Length: 452
Image (cartoon, rainbow, N blue to C red):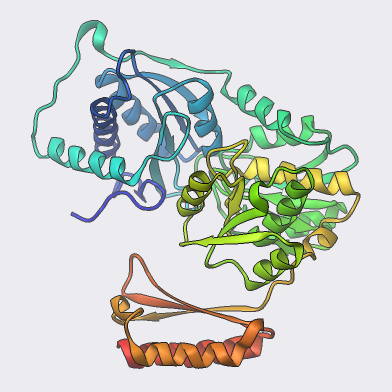
C-alpha cells in the first residue's frame, strides 16, 4: 500500500478514496498511537475536531468523532473553523489531539484528515507512519482493546471556539485598521464567519465576497487560487487592498489598489521588514522554500535580512523555524507562518498583519510590495523520465552549469523531481521572460535527453 499521509495529512475524493470507514479507523489508530507514546498518561484524553464547510465534512466529522470516542477520547466539536483556528484551540484548550477535516484549496469533491499534536503542532512524520501502520493492522482484523462503560469518550460542542480565535487574532495586532477599505474573498470556505468578524472589529470598512458557503461551492472560481473576482471587486469599490483565503484559510494572497496580485513572497518581504522594525525578527532571518522568487532573495539581501531556504512544503519551513527559533517563514503560494502567534500557516492573521502595516505606514500596499521585484519565472514539467537520476547525471549537470553561467546573478535554475509523478520540474528565473523561456526550453530538452 502506498503511504496515506502526504505533506499535509490524508487527502482524496470523499466517499471514494477517503471514506467514513477510513476516517473512523485513522482516528482510532491516532488515539492508540498517542496513548502508546504516553501523551494521555495520567489524565482523560481530549481532542478538538473541526472542519471546513464541504458537504462531505459532515459525515467525515461524524466518523472521526465516533472513532475517537470509541477509543476513549473526549471530543470537543468546534464546527466550521479554519485550520489555524483548530490548531490554536488545540493548544489553548490543552487538548491532546486536534483533527481538521479539509482538503484546503482542492475542489469540493475532495476532503482530508489532518492531525495536530498537543500544543497545536503538526504530528511528526514518525507518528504519522505509526498511525498508518496501526490503521492497516486494525483494518486487516487485528483486535484492539475497546473501553466500555464510563471509559468511552464523551462528545460535546464547544461553541466559544470562534470567539476565542477571533479574540486571539485581535490581541496580536500591532495597530488598528481604521480608515482602510478592504475586500475579503473567503473562498466560500472555513473563514467565511471569523475572517470578516476579525477585520471588522479591527476597524476596517469591508466588502466581502465568497462568504456564502453551501457545502458545494468551496474554492469554486474564488479564493486564493482564483483571484479575478477579488481584483475586479477591489477596483469596483476603490478599496485599499484585497485579501484572499483558500478553503481552510491557512493561506493568504493579496491584491493592491490597482488590482495587481501580491503573492506570498511579497507578503513575506513586507512582514519581514515590519517585524524587524519592531525587533520581532530573531536573528534578522526569514525562512522560505527553494521555489521562492529570486527577487525575494535579492530584496532580503538589500535589506540586510538573512534568508534560509528549505524543501518545498510548509511543514519543512515550520520544522526549520522551530529548530532554530525563527519567527517568520512561508511559501510563494501564501502559506505564511508567524510562529510567535500561530503553529501553522494562518491566512486571516497574515491578512490582518499585512493590512496593519498599510494602516501603520500610510503607504499603499503597492508601494510596500515594491520592496521586491518579481523576476519572470517559467516552470516546465518534463514527464516520463527517470526522476531518480536528476542529481547524478553528468550531462544534466553540464547543461545546468551552462544555463547558470548565462543567467549570472540575475537568474536562477532549479531542477526538482516530482514527489508523486514520474516527471522532473524545470524552473528558470531570469531578468526577462523571453530569456527565461529560452533557457527553460533548452533545459527541458536536456532533461529528456539525459533522463529519458
